Every structure is written in structure tokens, then in C-alpha cells.
Length: 107
Image 1 (tube, rainbow, N blue to C red):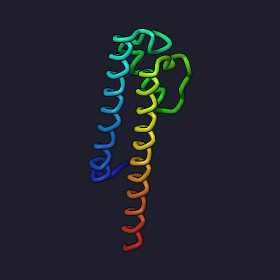
Image 2: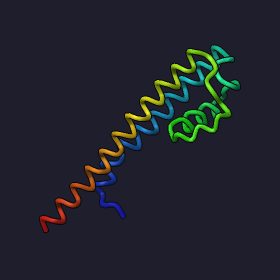
Image 3: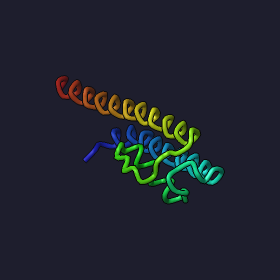
């Protein structure tokens, strides 16, 4: 079980991931509504979230692909933010692990 301090430190990361998913889902949904040919199929709320999570998780099933330059730009920006988010999460993980090792070696 995580100590309360670790949960408190993890909360901003969880909030960032949720906000990330919401923002890119809304951008994809708006783009699909404005230009229906933007993606392989018209996106609805659920399919916009599905597409965003698919790209975020690097699964990329390929069933909803970007078809226009605007959609490709949005997805490319999302992938770059995915990489940055992953780097922040990995850094936080290793920072927490290093702090735990330092605390234990001081005991």
C-alpha cells in the first residue's frame, strides 16, 4: 500500500493524464465535426476518447486513422505530448524510487 505522501504526489500526474485525454478527445471530436473526412470514420464522443487513448497508449489499432493534414497535425502534436508525458511520469517514478532508496539507506 502506498503511503499518503506518494498518493499525494501521484494525484497531479493522474489529473494531467485525465486532462490530456479530455482535451485531445475534444479537439479530435471538434475536428471530426467540422471536417467529417478528417478521420477514417466520423468521431462521436466515445470514438474520440477511444482514438485518444489508443494513441496515448501507443496501441494504435488503426481503425480510426487521421486522413487530412489538420487531423494528422493534431495526432502528431498528441504523440509529441504523449512522449513528454511519458518522460515526466518516468522521471517522477525514478525520483520517487531514488528518494525511497535514500531514506532507507539513512535508516
